[in-house]
Length: 267
Length: 283
Image 1: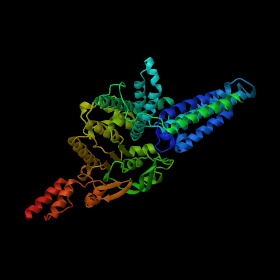
Image 2: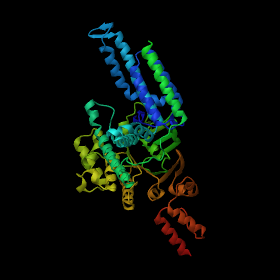
Image 3: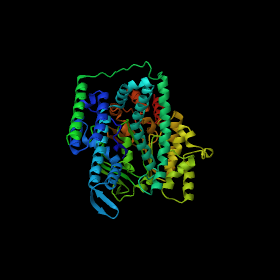
Image 4: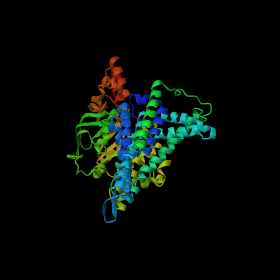
């Protein structure tokens, strides 16, 4: 059940997208997310969808795997749609009791849903094709200019890579603890909200204890290898752009131009 | 109350590139009161197999029967099944959570909806059965040693009065003394309570002295199934799949090939000693 959340999980495969420099993928994802919010009409979304579908096809990640992550945000999606549907003022379409549905409301709800779905899919695609280590390497290198204004870039990226690294481990552990407690008759799925919240105690206590223990062990292991922060630290595999990376940048620029022209200016 | 597995298959992460079969066509019949050793390498499917026995995992195909009923029927009461088929996981750290040991052991019977008195009685009995000292009853389970934690974890399942007790690598991470203590304890539980026990391990030496039957798993399949002597006689094949027979078997085989008239069936230290003494007495 917990395995369903794909965000932050790497899918091992050999594809163009997997081999791409993480910086390119980060920039692409960032641009993609921005593009979703500047688009004003459905033609723009069609272009975004094409971009996304191309990405998915290139990634060799089975679509089923990508959309599995969607289940987790379904509730959020539903609530967002409802609010937009009922609370947007505009030309009235249907009205009963105190609820009115407007033309603008429907448009907003659909757009919001598309945005959210694309946003999650896009960022899932990035984390599915990039190992956490690569991702934070890319982030560190992209944020390096901020060091001039004393932002602890290395520390932030190290924290992120540790956090990302631990997501699957803790997820697996949660699964095991759940099973161990279910074997003792614990019930996580039925009962009132209060009862269900209470039933999480036998899950959370062992999980927290194990997380603290792991953090402690990791700190020890890092210190044993003389870790002392980012100053003067070199990389075994420094990030170097290849030809495909420049091509990918070109594709991103092309995409942005198309989005701005068709999604905002022309229509 | 036999457990029957009928052509059970289980595939992890189906429909992804990571899909792999954890169980392939497993057929087993575990009768009441038997003491079974389930042996296999890491990743051989033994842990997955035991999770099928109390309905934590559902087979991709095939059926699991307990007491003549299919446990994966939609109207089967899984909660009461888990009380009858108790499963103790490998790491006690995965289940201990209460502020003191006694309360932790109460968790299982409490989930069964028993009256408070009965819950406490069962918890007390269970802790006594595993040989847990009274003085530690109200201590935090996190301050205990590995062996003691394991005892509390076993008591936590025993308190539900299971008819079948499954222990997943109960000796992992224990020192030799702690290992022997736990194994003796399990053996004692089997003798005194007459319940079915399935002991999962990757070490033949762990189980050879105690169990009545050994099931060897290899790459998701049942490789061998029989009495210890019978299984160990395949020691060459066992080696091929990366599992060794108990050291005693090797000693006896060596002695025999060196020309001594010993019976190679001896699997425990005690039997081997007698055999060797007998052989030398005849010399």
